[in-house]
Length: 302
Image 1 (cartoon, rainbow, N blue to C red):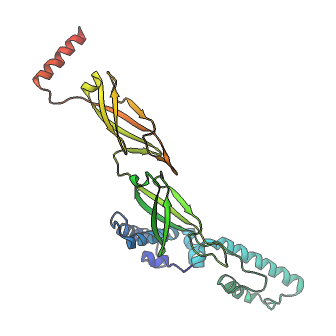
Image 2 (image 1 turned 135 degrees about the horizontal axis):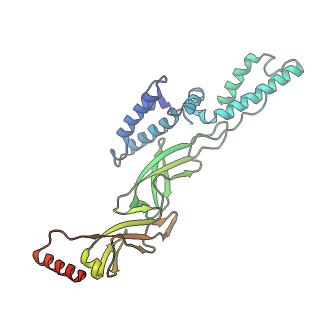
């Protein structure tokens, strides 16, 4: 996998403070955000690169590993364990056999060995170079709620490569899915890393989503609430006629079974649709209406 200079991506020096990194990230994230650059693949690619750089450099521990190991920073712990194991073997051989031919009895050649071992030179001396999984990639994808009502295919550009993927129906805001084998190249012949995509699902409807259920508040006029009647309610993909019972109270909830949102990865299975009635008190009454309400109040009091 090619080396990615995260400092260059954010436009900061290697000596930049956490505050400077955070400031640079926010500035670039706003500049390349999909909301600001709709339908701009290049801006989307930049936005993903900026997010990836920030994930590494904003974490002190990850930054330290990146500074030391570059593109192999995610394998830092494995590399250190391998070094420790090789060092222990060297010390054992040196103590029991009066030196080791692979290093000529000279531990100064040790760093050269690991430079060859982890720099792709194939290694020598103690055996084969260890194989490490490639770097995992992280990307974010912004999409409308109505677009995940059914499964759909979409092409995503990550590190200059176009990846065609199927977005499962019912995916939720903030949900992350893994696409195996679409990350960076492995080290020493190891497997490729994976691609993790986090979805930013924008609710472009008037309904409130709760997993596969949808919630909606319907304004009900006082006369229909008192006398009952029939109303038409709009769901996500249809219109439904509902009978309102006489004496319906403010805050009454009604459930429409199977009229909600698509369940995750189940294109033909849906949650429920919940309606809450908000009974509206009439304003600006006419003289006739006021007179009738007065009569009703007198009848109620008698």
